[in-house]
Image (cartoon, rainbow, N blue to C red; front, side):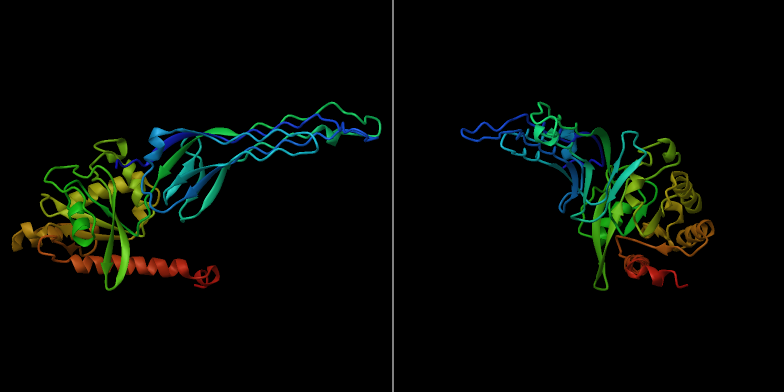
Length: 343
């Protein structure tokens, strides 16, 4: 199934039904009078987060969604039925923006969460509402109010605990495949990963979700390569694992290149907790390994982890380091609001 993380759709809620102009005409009824019923309310447009979806591919083939019009009022004071609602089902992590693709309407992060995007129009009053002492047979009724219509953007940002960043061929997909059951495409050429991927890692009987995104290169924030559009999928993560390939000639320079792209992208990515690791370490001899670890340490300002998916070197250490940050973040989110501010 093709991965689609952005879609533009048109929505319209239902118009309200018109009120009725009607009079009682039963035989042998001495006093008649108006008995026109009100029109029914138009249907609403809802968004609902459902489990089992991880892409917006459904909205590639259908872009227009319209709720039903309310039923018109009828005689004998019969109110029209409400128009049927329409519900757009989306995956967890979907954000909704106005047509300008900048103004956020809502952010849906929990399965079962619902949001009304457009309310249906109210039904019109029947002529029974317009009876007065001086006008006992009104021949007027209100039309229903029109529904709301708009174009909106749906944008998916994956929900994950940890995110993998780095240049193409830094070993991100290999790491994901080695620690989770995910099966990303792995090959010896740049930009093997074209779409974000998710996997569930398990360490010390605890689990967390890892997100892998296509590699960044210098100038990604300006659209170079695949650009930085997929960075949105690691915005929600609690920690980043920054992988630098041992095959890079200058590990420190490579690290700084990716950091510049994260800072240029913004949205708080550069401020997230970061774990730095030298990947593909099994390709180095001891002298080269020492040299590149030192270069990466100078650039990052901390001791990097050393990883090898082939020999499993450092894999458990990296998972425990990620799990430690994730657990701390989870505990902080679970605390009551008053407790958070005590310090």
